[in-house]
Length: 215
Image (cartoon, rainbow, N blue to C red; front, side, top):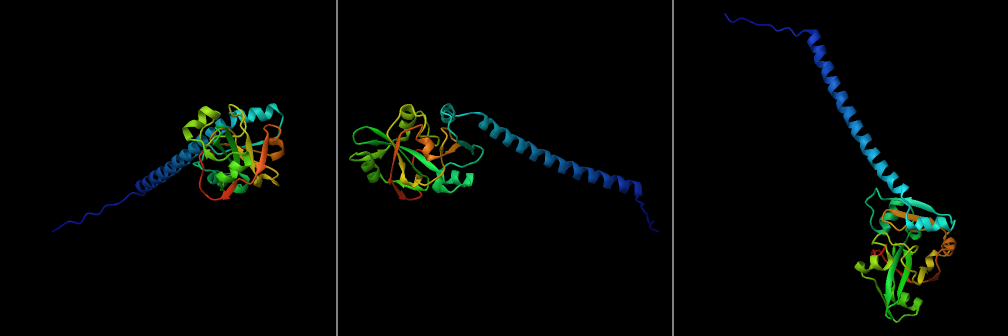
């Protein structure tokens, strides 16, 4: 005769297992929260570190007691000018890039144009009285201006070069351009910029979405 065995699960044992499972779930949730907080603190720390470091452009503006607003995006993956405009939540027509060129004569020229446009080399040459102009080679940018690709500003170059602002800047109360470092833009009025550098305005662009070399 086969015996029947009955197992009785004690209520206390079931309760202990349930409590252990609940504790594991709570610990898992807390660990997730802790990791998220650490990530956010790390991002905040990186952004604060960038914000605390003033660029040469900022120092020049402050020395001249000119109003400006810094904008930081170093904690993002934005690279091109249109991406920077999107990250900042600004109209690309108000965000400008700085391009350095070389004329047929060997003279260098700076053109500051909206990020969503391309430099029209024929218009650019006409604006500065050259037979032709060409984009400066990327490897020549740093030794010539002191700035690197992605952080080229019309303010604070090693020496001043004749500068042309695209006519789209007219009518803008304020506009954005590089703060002299990748991840930093400054916003100020075109009129206040005239108190820092001498520039002329001209129609030197053609509509396009290609990113030029010196932003």
